Length: 257
Image (spheres, rainbow, N blue to C red):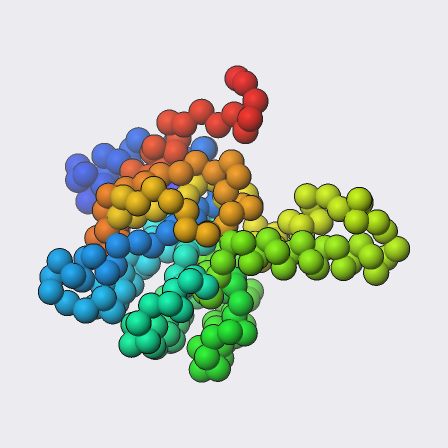
């Protein structure tokens, strides 16, 4: 896997040193990222918040390129929460337009990297143009066999669990079972992330220590890595550092080793 980086990582550079520390036999299978700090990054430069969101697109490219080269099975990015509708209308409108343009501009690169795209959340609550771009991206990359990219849009962890529980109970009752027959697996089958590996590593940028209603069920035993780096400055080096820290953790899943 290290040879996947030979054309982009300079020998004897900081990135090369970090890459040498990674144990490729113990990579996380699923990395989730809370992309935080765009607004603060823009404000520090005297720019509007949307300027920071646009700058974050380069960080998304770095994450996807690096994870595809590492053959990480799944990457989930927190792009827009159900609570983000409370933000100023101009910012929300700009975000929606930016997401639509990102899908248009980056889709060929995503496809070239054998990445399969999907969106999770209440997609029906987004504007029609964005829904159309999402549907097109899903169809265009449907046969790709590499990293699965899930972008959380109009997403809320509590809402996801609530809806999954409703669907699971409805299925039980329709099949003549009792609510007492409900199991964790029934809920998991109805989550947006069904079929994906467990989230091994959650990365949050900007130094904030909270999970912001993101993947509440899926993060039960995830390792959490918080970096003070604001998202627009997050690059391949930062991904390597997160993975190295992950590999230093002793994962007991509630047991004792």
